[in-house]
Amino acid sequence: MTKIKYLLDESAMPTAWYNIAADLPTPAPAVLHPGTGQPIGPADLAPLFPMALIMQEVSTERSIEIPEEVQQIYRQWRPTPLYRARRLEQALDTPAKIYYKYEGASPAGSHKPNTAVAQAYYNKQEGVKRLVTETGAGQWGSSLAFAGALFGLEVLVYMVRVSYHQKPYRRALMEVYGARVVASPSEETASGRAVLAAHPDSTGSLGIAISEAVEVAVQREDTKYALGSVLSHVLLHQTVIGIESIAQLEQAGDYPDVVIGSAGGGSNFAGIAFPFIGAKLRGERNVRVVAVEPAACPSMTKGKYAYDFGDTAHLTPLTKMYTLGNSFVPSGIHAGGLRYHGMAPMVSHLLDLGQIEPIAVQQLETFAAGMQFARSEGIIPAPESNHAVAGAIREALRCKEEGVSQTILFNLSGHGHFDMQAYTDYQAGKLKDFEYSDEEVAAALADLPKVG
Image 1 (tube, rainbow, N blue to C red):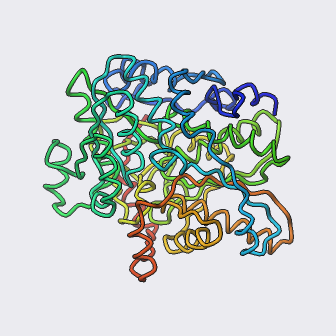
Image 2 (cartoon, rainbow, N blue to C red; image 1 turned 90 degrees about the horizontal axis):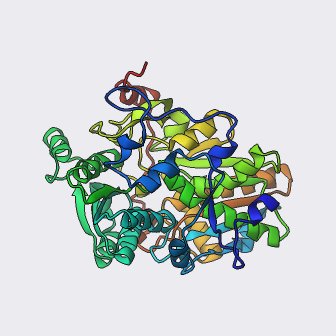
Image 3 (spheres, rainbow, N blue to C red; image 1 turned 90 degrees about the vertical axis):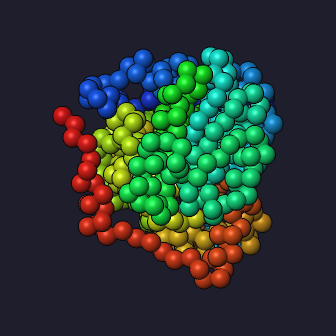
């Protein structure tokens, strides 16, 4: 893997991000202006993002250098550890080897600071004073709050209402870092008030929270919007996960047959998977890549590959993605970070190209997997990460059934220390599975925008 090695410093931490756009057999579909339906240009995104991030969004360069100031902050927790899950292997009695990349080692407890620090840096460089964002489970919000504190930026977070109440300690963490947190939908924005007028008891969704954040961001010149998933520059920043994993596995003399990540908007999944998919696209190594999503929000397994808005109020550009429809409001599962109606356009494009295998897993199976992992390996995963754990266990049991020895790698994207109420509810039998019928999904897809 000599093409990857030059991206690493002596500590095996990446000095450049990997851009999978350089290795695609066909380019991803264009992003369209919501008014004209024509491909957007940098000027159309300028009210939301600093120009440096816009240029990364459209770049086709394979390697994009990580600024030294960002590298210095990364070194506080990167490279993150790669572990062999030997006790889990023994518990499953599987011939498979299971490795996991542990992103819970970051200050905020998840993979999200990989992009939060980069976004805060570029915004600070361009004179931005305030960042506005949304968050589901709170991992992204706490990460941006952490990054904002490092760079002296004010941070406003619209937190999906069901998670706002489910995860008070995640909210408290954001406030310790200096952010202001508002339950979404809220009375602070026109889009929030519209939702509450129609649905006073709305539990919220990431699509609604995005609408509120975007609405606020465009009102002041000193304010920009920051997104924790979905867009290509966000996925780009997360590729440090996969780059490190390749180097660490090389030190162990191994390479995965299967790479697994939980998938909601697509950032942690892309982070671990894209460098491996890139090697496959370049003809260097072969690998299966499995994306695990919640059955309660099955954008890849039941959604449609179509142009859609990223938010409920139709303020964002149109991107082609696997979507359940922008009006879709999923059930209040504890994996709040996976409750998004669409999948990242770049992940969706790779799925359409046959490079990704998606599976949907029920909530109870994911918590059972998380409990087994915690009792074997000692780390309590976040509810979102439990989906990847469940996917890895399925693959390990498949190897046992088939009598084959394969190497499995999954991304443990964050710890669950702020999610203990979810585990308490699971052990008390209070959690339940959710699944949407084809008819319900079809109804949510009925209002997709018409694109010529």
